[in-house]
Image (cartoon, rainbow, N blue to C red; front, side):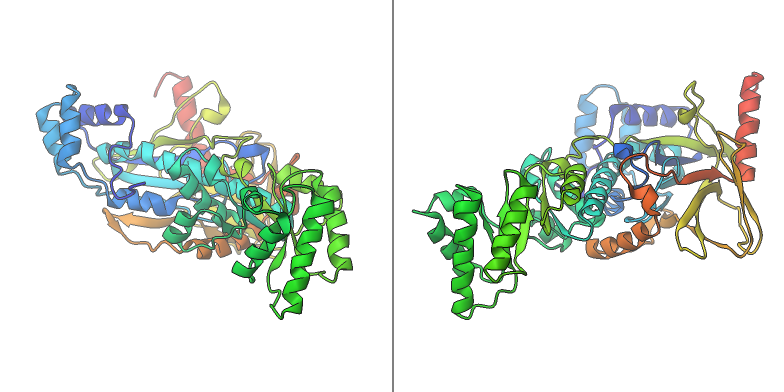
Length: 485
């Protein structure tokens, strides 16, 4: 849980490569891109998250005497290299797409421009942080979309893969749209709402269900959500809850936030009966909350069945992204600076088309339709390229190049997505608070068409290459095919 010192959170080969660069006198400035190849869960978009933790990692990047002693004990590092590490500090530039931004495959989320030894070292930690938080933020956005405006509480801490995954997963879930988390440490660390009710054990520890409900209501009258399925939901739980709500009202206790929670059974059927019982008793504004291994698909299905649930607690399937447990982000060399300060593009080839990288020092522009405010496409281009939205813009699919469209000048707007985070090793960016990021993320999701948000066969948002970048990539590929790398 100590985010101030994660220097050894790296794969061994990053350090052995660093020593190789050091011993050979190689330390040119390079460009590395962190990006991902496919949206998780077969979705049409992803959500960027984790930048604040990347910042903390970079700021704390240093080898203390204990780290050096450990590395010496491995017997593979020479003393002059260990001496270099003892004074190591990050001195490069980092650009990144801000947290909460809607993102798509192949576009650089983080760009590191630094001496190659520095850029190599930070690979593993950057990917570890990005891959986890982007995954959970994306899953949360999907769950919240299925809930259609109902509150979604994250409460998966006990099922998360360890304390870090529980805390930072909850953080990412809040960015994705959850209204609160059960995780108290996350609430303290990131100033996000913490919420909760009570367990079945609370009910079972009292002589009867009514007494348990009554005691809880006296303790927490302004947050009185009663768990009604410990014994029998319809014949015991809900009637006892109604009895307690009636007593509260008759004694003058304001019913500001109250209701029931169900954690088992046929939630669609039970919620309809519960709604009728509560309404008939004079409690039409009582919350009906549900949990029980929910995910976006089950919530969507319950909505389609007319379930009367108004609040959702989602645990295991959210905090673990159970159906898609990995984000798949990668970190690839894109350019090396020559003696004249020019970036020489580099490319990774593969028989798999999706694994062929985009070369060069790049940036990303988002293109919006002026009439709709919705995303039309993203454009990956070289960092020094500029565009005039008053002029026509031709876009084409970089794989299936016959698929083309032209946006007429004046009909679209463009926004450069990456911002500078570090400049010559110095932090130049203020990370917003989590709830500020959530508000920004909500606006970002509104720029997506509903067809892109659907869970089955979502409409693809095109990520295209500029003409200059496409031509550069094609020329490099042609040179390789002729045996001239």
